[in-house]
Image (tube, rainbow, N blue to C red):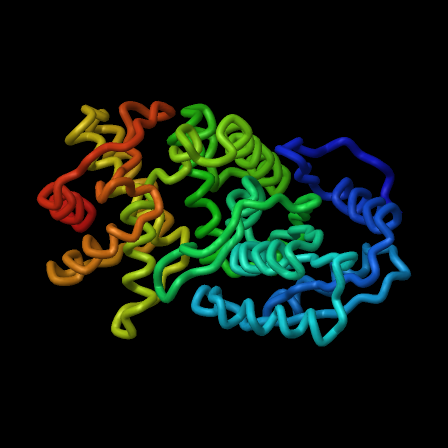
Length: 360
């Protein structure tokens, strides 16, 4: 089928494989491990658009079962986990079974958590099909689900046997999902590499091959951070740039029926505009660069307005942020592009001013 091709990124305890090399990895794993059964977790979208493509390149005689969940962040919860655990049990999954998570970040996060806890842990492989999942959920071993509208409150850090990135799946995505993934790629540039940030500014000129290279570099940036700090004691927290307010905005819009639910990247883009304004006020981040960042995000993402009482509720949600310690809300801000600063304290008054800046 595929010839071995060395295009992978070595993470801690597993590798991220790209394109042809990903199926070489998978089929070799299936041959060597001799799993009792293979389960493929999909959502209603990836079942239709991605599963046929995926199965065509699998080479195995092992029985395969498909488990489908509803698509969408609102189904990333313990109830869905219970459904998948029951399905595994009814289909006689044992400790020698393999779970392949074929989908976006909801499927890979939830599927990884299900696999990590079913019978105290079975092997799993992640196959991210959205751009966001490829550049974000693919590295770091974070698994988990939301608690109500609170993002990723329940979960464990546990590594897959491998991650397969096949950019053919990107052709199945709507434009807003592609933009959502680009937000995390922009973030990787802002926290780690001004060179990469500048490459991302030329998106309009890029070919598919260029995009594949940018995805590879984005995964590399995140992987280098995670390898140095796997349990998020320091450096890895920089990946939360834009996420403190971004997650609160995402949660607020998810739990309020009067608001349009935002994709993760859409909320994080707002969070990064707010964070760069806070950086310019507290850390002397250059105001002209803050404006450039704001203009870039406004070019790709729709602007959303928030009333005073909505901002009150968003600020109230900050207390659930996982980076908090001893009751303090900790922000990641920028001194310069590629120079993040951890554990910054921000007053509510300044947060209101940041929203004014975003709106203006």
